[in-house]
Length: 630
Ligand code: ATP
Ligand code: MG
Image 1 (cartoon, rainbow, N blue to C red):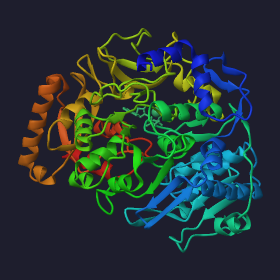
Image 2 (cartoon, rainbow, N blue to C red; image 1 turned 60 degrees about the vertical axis):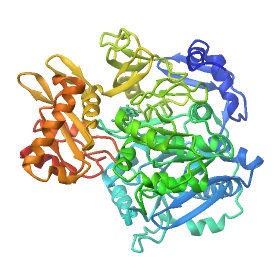
Image 3 (cartoon, rainbow, N blue to C red; image 1 turned 90 degrees about the vertical axis):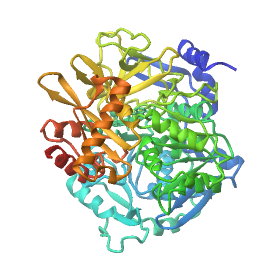
């Protein structure tokens, strides 16, 4: 067995051999003739000439061998539904959905936009698209009409699949009227809207000639058999827009064969999940984690996957662990935001359940701060593995590889570059940083299989957004600030936009946030750099306390702020000390749980907070404004 280092080295030095071996993990209708065509840098085509299908690899091939094994476990604690689909049942439902698509005129290469809550039909809708070679574009169900309209105009779908409503925290969240508004706003008009009526919003509007009912059509196609369309490896499978943390979202275009291979290989080497086991990702199908690790990855590996509609706290804070026990979940995937929510709860909720099936918990999406990482791993007594990646890459760039070598976990670090990625930390002049020197994380192309092929319809934007960090060397960068220690462990310090320059010292927001997290009263914190005449920039902190009584009076606020200064001084020195710590009850985040630091910074500097279409709770901004004014 290779060490993770040897494995990585082999993937970089002998990519053809390496990826040919990984490609055996998926079924090919026709074999590929070339592993990688990199004749037009930075565009890379993987497994040229090979023909395959994502739905076949995720469903049909398992249904053929293990028809009665669990494939999809749909759980809604919102509507009290629970339904398990075997691989055979899942395939049947996908074929029915695919038959509906065909009857509505959807052809190979057409776009199908999916704007749905976390229900089983969303999985059918996604896999039915890839089954017939249509390109899906899933838009997160929480987005309002404006964000949805932009995505409709960009993807130009012939069909939109939607639902009357989703449910969150016990309340129905209507979808259909937002969709109607979005179509009204958009220039592009879809020919058909396929509605999955959950009976949650009795009053939703039905547009004659355009809107059709899923349940009625399904009845007509109960026995439908729709074969998989074999696609050339580079043909697109889907479009997915980035989270929009830093501004206008980009339409990431994914291929077919490269993605299938990358996911299959990640399931083996990173996530360590296989046939007969269960994967539970707490993400949403609207995000990349939902695409790769609710739908495709686990199913390609022959695992059952949990699709959960609900919050981590209802009916109580034990719900996730109850699911783990009931379905013998072996792999979990969540986000630091959720871990920080659980950290505020009584750990007894976790300890009540039998978690013996669980092998690993993976976390991604945002920096996992050291105190939260340590807390989670100590409470769970399981390896909690941070992994760093992006919508663009589709699968991890930095992670530990327990399927290759069980390396020790360092709190606060997503460990090492993943095989296939020649990832380094660079200085601003394009040279490579030494150990313990901060710089920009970037990948020397070609990007490995699974990563974006281009920005949908905008090849020039693909090049200008991601490949223009330096004149020389050519690198792929999404502008994250990072550092590597003497043992080769990486830490992401924040986005390069968020680096704070205090009197010539450069600090990642992450470093200061992490220092503040060490104060026991703090539940969550965001730090931004604010313009300062004397020092260039000074850090400013916005913190949420675990117990509101700690900041009930101005005197208590002053005292706690002073204590927090002391904590930062002790860890980073006075250089990292924020000018102020403002206490608030919530922080502005995107709907995927990422801190909107650029908006915080704008407000702190008295500017307009900018594009807020992806914000989760706009009232948090009011609080920030009030805190700044006080
Ligand atoms: P946009 O690109 O539209 O501004 P976004 O970058 O938030 O949005 P995503 O692709 O969802 O969209 O997020 C990827 C980014 O999230 C990474 O570039 C990085 O900044 C951050 N990130 C993801 N995982 C980690 C992690 N494990 N540790 C630290 N940061 C992470
Ligand atoms: Mg990004």
